[in-house]
Image (tube, rainbow, N blue to C red):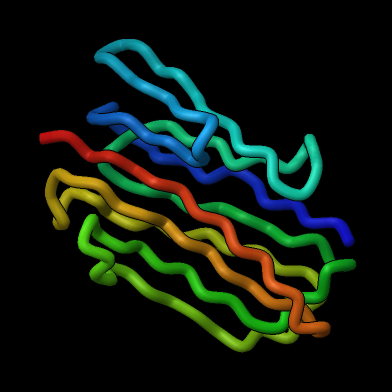
Length: 134
């Protein structure tokens, strides 16, 4: 099983901090960018985060994994859904690129959650927490 999940980028002016695992976190100041990487299936599979006012989601899953269905959710600090998409997508190669504006939701803590199952109903679940400051 090979999973390639690449590049979750927050683009634009830096406005907060982000963390993508219990161990990894990144902080930003004006003019300074630090990144946090989360290794998922293998050392080369990374989720990279930079903080900004919009969320650019770019990911792909290698064809050997065989995607069956997926969901992508953005939840606020009270676990209320502010963005959702999902599909039954019988594909061996899967790529997704979305831009989610954070500005309409205001400051606070948000969770980006990606879930996918393959043809054997094996679950891939990844989460990234983004803190947007006023």
